[in-house]
Length: 435
Image 1 (cartoon, helix red, strand yellow):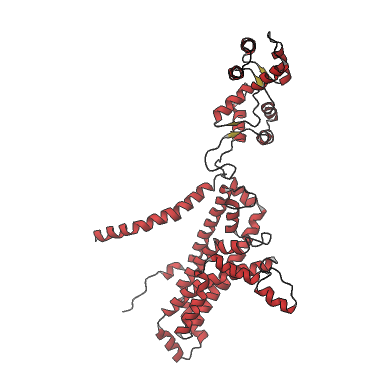
Image 2 (image 1 turned 90 degrees about the vertical axis):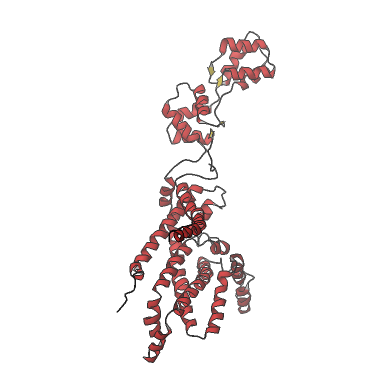
C-alpha cells in the first residue's frame, strides 16, 4: 500500500511541477507586481538617480522645496581637485593651476561671471578664451546629471549646498529615482479612474450575454436537440458545431471579418438591394458587440454542447422509455428527466465558461481590438493594452498587474457564488443505499 502511494506521488510530480510553474507562479508574481510602479520608464530592475527639469519641478511642487530646486538647477562653480586635474590634462599653464589651488581651492561661486572675475585676477592673467575653458571645468550643476547610487547624488548635492538637511536629501532621492518602488497607488488609481467603470460594465455585459445566450443556453439547446435525432446525423451535426473551437483563432476571426468587411459577403449581398458597402463589424458600437458576442458565443457553445450531450447520453434510457409509456411529452422529459441530471454539467460549464470569458482576449483582440472607440474594451483586453501593448509606448507593468489581480479575485468570488448557488455540498453527497 505504501509503495502504491509512493508511486502515485512520483507519477504526479511532473503535473504538480507544471501547475506550480505555469499557474501558481504567474499568479503569485502578478500579485507581487501589482504592488509596484513598474513600467517602461522604470524598467524591471534597479534604477538610477536622474536630475532633470521634471524632477526639479516635482521637488518644488510636491515637496514645497522650490528654493532647493532652484539652487540645484542653477550652475554652481566649485574649485576642486577634479577640475584642477582636468586643467592639467588640457595643458593649462602650471602657474594658473597653482594659483587656483593655493588661493581658491574649495571655494564655491554661484555665478559664472563671479568665478571668471576671480580667474582673471590670478597673477598669470589668463586670456579670455582660457578663462572660459577653465570655468567650464569647474561647473557642478546637477541639471541633467545622472548618478548610479544615492551616495553619489547626495555627495554632489552637498557640494552645491553643504547645509542640506535629511528631509531635503530624502525628498531629492525620492524625486530623482528612476527605478520601480513598492506602492499601493495602482489600486487607488484603479478605483478613481472613470475608465474602470466603463470597462467593468463592458465586461459584465459581454460575459453575461455570451454565457446566457450561447455558452450555456444555446449549448444546452443543441445538446437536447441532437439527443432526439438519430445518432449518425447527430454526430455529424456536433462535429460541424465543434469546428470553431478546433480552428485557429486567426483563421476563425478572419472568416468573420471577410463576412463583415466593406468588400465582404454582407456588403456584396446587400449591394444588390442598394445598400452601400461598409464595415459592418466596426460601423457602430452595436454592430461591434453583435459580432464580438457571436464570435465568442459559437466557440463557447460548441464546448457546452459536447459536455451536455455526453451527460444526457449517460442518463439511463429506461427513464425516457418509462416517460414515453406514461405519455410524457418531450418538453416534460426535458424538464423532469434531463435538466435534473444536468446540475453537475451546468455547474461546470457555467463556472468554467465564466472564467474563460473573463479572461477572453484573442477573439476580441483580433476582431475589434476594443473598438470602435473603446466600445468593446473588456477587462482582460484593457490589461493587455495597459501592460503589454499600447499606442503611447509606456507599458505600465505594475498597473496592469493590479488590474489582472482584480480579475483573479473576481473569478474566485464568482466561483464561490456558483458553488453556493448550485448547492455544491448536495451535489457531492454520497447516494443513499436502500436495503
